[in-house]
Length: 321
Image (cartoon, rainbow, N blue to C red):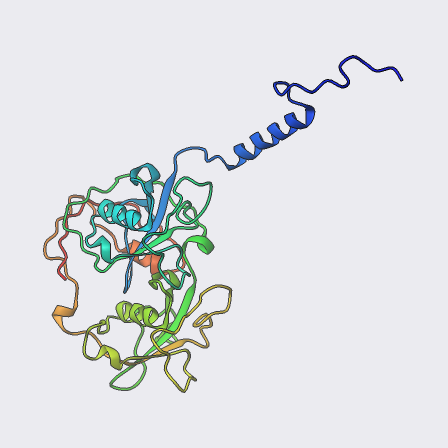
């Protein structure tokens, strides 16, 4: 058989074969598919143990409970401890060492301080508005003046992603009978309340749900002598109260309190009448023609954005403990 010259010569390593070229092209495509384009941001929600509060760096004017900060603002190493410190400083919050960071609202426990998070990956916790990380702090206490943006983009109307789910409840007074709910929505059943699950601070337990309802309804807060007397039942037909550490998952279509015909029940409720139990602004000025609206809070209580919330204000608040 006739042999062509070079048939038995080794292929030069400097000349890639067809397979090598295919491999190179495939690797390049894989690299392109995982490369993040445009600026990177960290998305987050802020909570105390009683519920959420607004960010100083809101994503949009009609959803100021989601914050967004450029990833480049976070100094390395990107450990949980470092990210907590940066978020607290950028938000003007104190005691970052006491803060807790959850990768999502459904996580049963906070992430360890030594764990590392990737802030420049294509996807992951905190890298999109659909998947924000959660920072839980001891106090919502800001003492420095905050200059808020005058113009922010409007949030997309996607209630499944941004506005949580409805949870129905009834409150029974320590003096007897069911109370009119401050979040009532049905004139024929005014003791039936409804709140958004985004109002419940992680970890999602019976204790955090109880604290959320007490705040929304203006009842005595944790630390009050009568707070421990209040008990949470999973529905009005339950024989025994839930324990504060009982986990309550809100995934799926059916969860505790999802059916308005079978709401959770808070029993032995006591209204907060002591002045020292309430958080009041000590001093404050509104440097705007229009005062800061409460529509952002209403947005969290309802199932969607409030179209009336169109203006922001510049505020200087000092809160008492």
